[in-house]
Structure formats: structure tokens, C-alpha cells
Length: 270
Image 1 (spheres, rainbow, N blue to C red):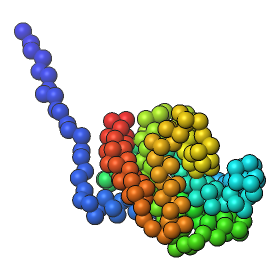
Image 2: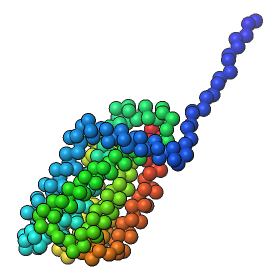
Image 3: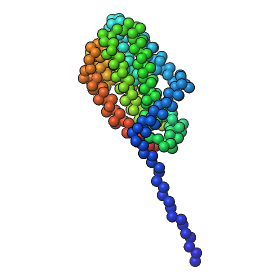
Image 4: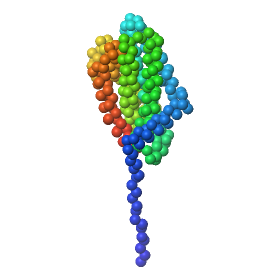
């Protein structure tokens, strides 16, 4: 009688690379440099961040200026802070789309095989995306000044632009989560634009709340974009940091705390 010997099964645990905070920051900066090189080799990726801030203020000012404020010049103090927030937020959609394209093309699988922090590819993409937000915000500021917008506190207006870039970078984690969850890049862009359309137009960015229906006014009161727009207007008109600016900062931090771990965990499971 012969017996067959079966070798013992060897259970191998997946290799887990643990890095410290400084190493994770270094890896994120390395991935951010990769994103900047992408802009260098494909400058058309920056067209929306450069052209939309020019077309948007001119278009909205020409359409809504006379109807809302009587003239475009009178509408500028209301429009420019609102357009600044809307256009910079629109630029953040590219972060989720880019992440989805990396996952769909298999590039992200190579990142997972590298001994780097798991959050580095996403954080690097967000840092590279912040360059887009700075370009968009700077272009809106220049176009607004060229159109005749003269804020009482120029320094406060510039501080408001910095606040918008910070809040947009934080909100990018939400779109990164959508990019990590949805399989197709086109679907990511569609879902992100749906969210942005609601947040942008159901706010006080372009139209005063007094001109809205009652139910829309309640929606605008709860919309975080309205708080951000009001914070920029207060900084530009009075040069003071009010409750709206504090709420915008707190909301930005809450978005990062919630969606940053969710995004990294979703990518790890995929």
C-alpha cells in the first residue's frame, strides 16, 4: 500500500510596507511631481483652468448683470467672488477623473506594488491639482480687476482666493473618493459635475438669496458653497474673517477627515 504525501500548504501574508509621516510626505511630493510632469507633457489639461476663468466672468456678467443689478459694473461685487468659488471648484473634478483613469489603465496597480505610502498616489494627485486651482483663482482675480472690479480690501480679496484654493483642495478628496468608487472615468466626470451643478447653482454665488423661491432659499442656507462665497465677499468688502470663513475652514477639515481614509481604504480593497 502506497501513501501519497502532500506538501504542507504555505500561507504567505501580503507584504505590508509601513512608512512614517515624513516618508509619506516625501512619497506624496514625488507623486505630485509626476502630476506636474503630466501637465508639462500635456498642457491641454490646463486649458479649462485658464480659459474657463476668462469665459465665465464675461459670460455671467453679460447675462445676469443687467437683469440682477441693473448693470454689469454694479453686479461685479456680487459676481466675482461667486464666480471665483464656482470656477475653482469646477477645476477639482479633474482630480477624480485622473485617479479613475490611472485605475482603469492599470497604472495604479504599479503604485500599489511599490514600497510607498498607500495614500501617496492620491495625495500627490491632489497636490498637483492644487496648481490648477491656483492658476484658475489667479486668472479669475486678474479678469475681475480688468472688468472693473475694485474690492475695498484687495488684501482681503486675495486672502479669500487662498481660502477658496484651500477649500477646493479639501473637497477634492470627495471627488477622489468618487473616482476610486466608480469604474469608468466618464461616469466619474458625470457624477462629479452633477454634484458641482447642484452645489454651485443652489447657492448665493450668482443670485442673491432674496431673489430665490422660499424652498431654494432654505437649500442655499444649508449649502456649504454659500458659506464659502459669503466668506470671500466679507473678506473683499470688509477685510474681516467672519463666521462664514470659520465654518468653511471647519467644513473643509471635516471633508478631509471623512473622505481621505475612505478613499485610501477603497483603493486598498480594489
